[in-house]
Length: 322
Ligand code: ASP
Image (cartoon, rainbow, N blue to C red; front, top):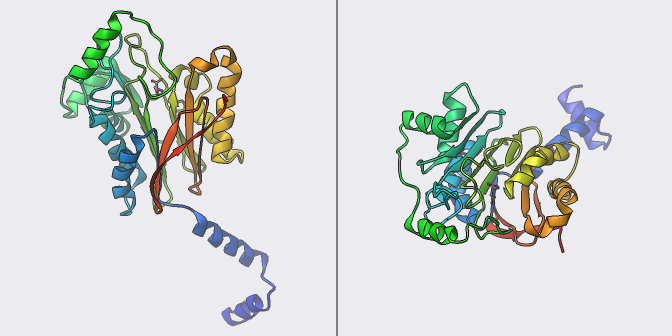
């Protein structure tokens, strides 16, 4: 069909199937909300603001999530992530982190000591080794070989609290922000690519060597560039049990909206742990390829930060246990 006659054809109101398909695709492309970045908890606001500097100038989601969470890792006043994080029961600060990009590249470190930015070590594992995960001494040796500095991460405040805790040595992680919490961040960049990062000092006063969901790809974080991304916070053992973030992404693949997918994952934890449900928190945060986001948690109290072109704001997640 010549250009002129095609124009007439469209003008006459009888669009061909292929023309309709093209129009629909164009409309869908216009609707995608990008760039956008989401992070868990209140400290997500400052992390999002940092990530936004990269996303709003056309940068990659992978760089944005790394730089965003680094800020929280470096803040000694954030006592559940990175430097200044609460130690394990032996007084050792052990950090867990992972990162994932839009091409299924992954990198992770677990039980890493003495390094202020575990997320950047995770990225180095992803980009500079044939492996996807390094733990403990091996992770530290690798970090030092990459030029990371060995430092003391136990601040006087965290040490004082730990010594206080030793008097009773009662291990009972509370349900919300009191002595744990992770920064999980997921982002969609201008080019339409998704990435995610997740980093934590884990549950305070855990056994030495305990690893939570945060460095486990599929548990604390998962990204599939065809579908969406998800990250988690809360009692890591429960998130690992249901392969939480992989589950959320797979549910989105089956057509669930982000919040519905998060809710279904929370329901699985609820079913398993009904009897001690008041003692557990899990929260999921999800973003799909269209830039639509959602969240759901077990108990009231989980909030998350969203930054898109309309600004940066903190929202409360809906919850299961009333
Ligand atoms: N999920 C983290 C862990 O289990 C802690 C948290 O997010 O509260 O290590």
